[in-house]
Image 1 (cartoon, rainbow over the protein chains, first blue to last red):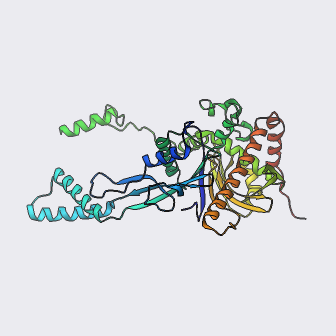
Image 2 (cartoon, rainbow over the protein chains, first blue to last red):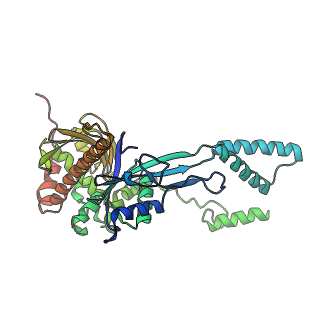
Image 3 (cartoon, rainbow over the protein chains, first blue to last red):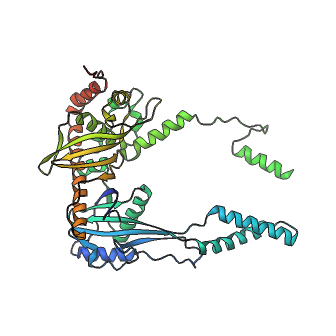
Length: 212
Length: 211
C-alpha cells in the first residue's frame, strides 16, 4: 500500500471526461469500481490463470467500496492482479518422467496427441499446487482537481490500470507527459518540434517529419 | 525426398535461398543501424524530445542555484544529484549513464550534451521553502519515481495519509510549475535567439580549475 507507506512512485493523469453532469460523482465512482471489481481466481476453472479488478485500499479482498473509499478530496482504492503460473521447468520435468514411464510400459514413445493431452493434464494438476501471486497497485484520485495517480513502477501495470478505469467509468485519462501538459496549456503542435541545434550535427528535420 | 523438396521451395518463397538452392546471403541488419532505429523510436514516442529538452534546460538553469519557478508563493530551487541518463539519436553514442554526487554539472556531461545527447532521466532535489524533496524523473512520462518527501508530522493514520497525499501533490505541483516555466520559454522567440545559444556556450565552457 504505497499510498500509506513505502516508496513513492506514481504516474500522473488528468481525468478528461466521464462523471456525467447531474450525477452524484461519488455514486458514479462506486458503481464504476463495482462494475470491474476484483473476483478471486477460480483454480478449479482450467482456463482461468489471471484475475484483475478494483479493491478497497486497506482490505484488498473487499470490494464493497463503502465510505472508506473517500478521504477528503480523494478517492483511494487499489487494483489487484492475481495470477497463477505453472513453472515451465516443473512441467517439462514431469512430462519427461511420464514419457519415460510410457516408453517402458508400452514399448514405444508417446505420439504427439498423447503428449499434448498429458501436458494439459499435468498442467492442471500442477496448477492446483501453485500459490497464485498477488499484486496490488494503489490509485489516488483528487476529485476536485481531476488528477489521478497510479502508484506502480511498471509502465505495463500503469497502462493496465488506466485502461481498466477508462472502461469501468467511461472516463478519459490523459497521461501528464511534457507533451500532453503543453497541449493542455494550449500550445499548438507546430511549436513543439525538436530544436535541431540541441540534437547534434547528424540530426535532420526529416527525423520527425511524420510526427511533428 | 518430397519433404526435402517442399522445404527448399518454402525457403525459396521466404527469400532465404535462390533458384539454385544456395542461401541468398541476405545481410543481417547492421547492429549500429538497429541501435539508431531504437534510439529514434524512443525519441519520437510521445514526443519524448520535449521532455529531454526540458530536463536539459533545467540542468543548465539549475547550476545558478536560483529559484527556477514559483509554486505556492515560494521559489523552487533545483539541484541535479545522483544518477543521470543522457540519450541522443545522432552520432555513435545513443546513451550515456553517469553517476556521482553532482555529476550533472561535470565537464564530461556538458561535453556529451554538446555532442547532441540530451538529459533523459535524472535524480532531482527540489527545495521549496524549508522543505526538501528528492525525485527521479524521466523525459518520456515525467513520472514520479522513488521520491523522498519531507517527514509526515501528523499522528492519526487518516491524517497521515492525507498529509502524505498533500506532499505528493506539492511535488507534482512543483514539477508542473517547472515544466510550465520551460514551456513558456520554449515557445517564446528568445528560445532560439538567446536561450539555445546560451546553453550551447555553457556546454562548451572550459572547465573551472581550483585556484
